[in-house]
Image (tube, rainbow, N blue to C red; front, top):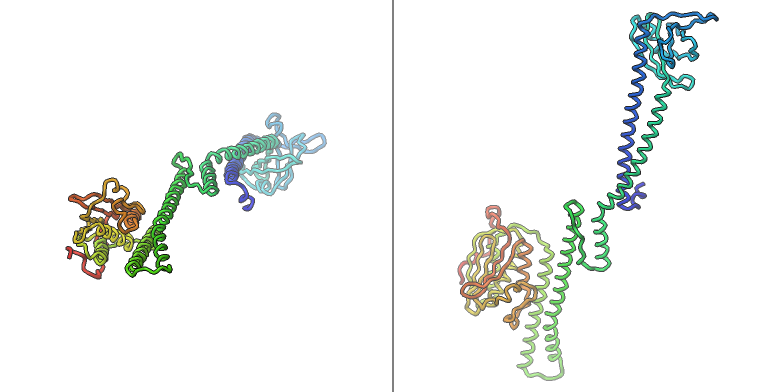
Length: 474
């Protein structure tokens, strides 16, 4: 049975389930109606028999002899209905019937027990089969040593019940058929979003076109499913586009240093003798190009790693992370002065990626600072502010400084891959925050990295720093 249902479509299974539910309801209702009608019809028969019992109980019954000497039960004419049978039962089990009453009612033990009652009024109902006729019998105690049986055929009641059973059966079949038909119609309408979802998924599978979308109407569960599917397709489309752009940009950025590196190596490996100064210059260029490629590849790996974080976020001290990043940049940029104002601030995130983002902001500010210039670092309320006193960013470049591989015109002659600030924005997005760049008063650039709502410092135990947090610039 389960294999058969499994081979059917979901729509057909819904229709079958609806038809089954309606069939069960109709069958139960039909059974209830049948027994209610049966009880009502039989109650009418029982009421008639009880009325006859009351009449007979008030009337003395006497045996009357026939011409043949056989005794019959004497009841005045018209006292009972033509189709009503009356029979007197003695304590020994013998009976007296009405004249011209050919059928003898069977005497059960319950009826014989009534003949032993001294007071009239006790009665029992029985159903008996009398020569193929279904008969309803009421027996009651008539007096010491006697009982009376009154019976009426149930032919009319049984015939009516047979007709009712046929009608209920037809109604049940019609109800099941209508339920199946309506189930197909309703399931078709209800499963329309699922059908569109399936068609869209098949189209995306066959064509790889992630721009496909499903029309969403309403607020039910299927509409929410369609909306979620559209959101998933949108996320996949954005991710695929970003991956393709990343690969294209990385290929473009790697092509230039690879070409130059190959040329220099071919010159160095050639048969032509080179002056020592030229050879040293070529070797220096090779080392510089290798360092540039190493930095580019490392930043590409960092971007890919940030898209798939392997560390679990935790509550961390943002001021301590900023201090560690500042110490590392200080060692790499000895010609730049740094000042820091670090207030205790707790955020929820991945420590290594946050420290890398702060380091990139500081390194970018130091790169644009003249020797001896100052870079200012501040941490407060879950935000990191880095300000330099360099030439600043042109208005047309401000919206794009955090894009991958974007480099302003003024930066194209300087070393760098254009990925450092892109990593900062990716870290900000991953932590529910943002990063913005703006022109600072008095010249230079101010970059603000926000990492979501700050946590209460009391909720996190303060770790022991490996060194003193940075204070004023040294």
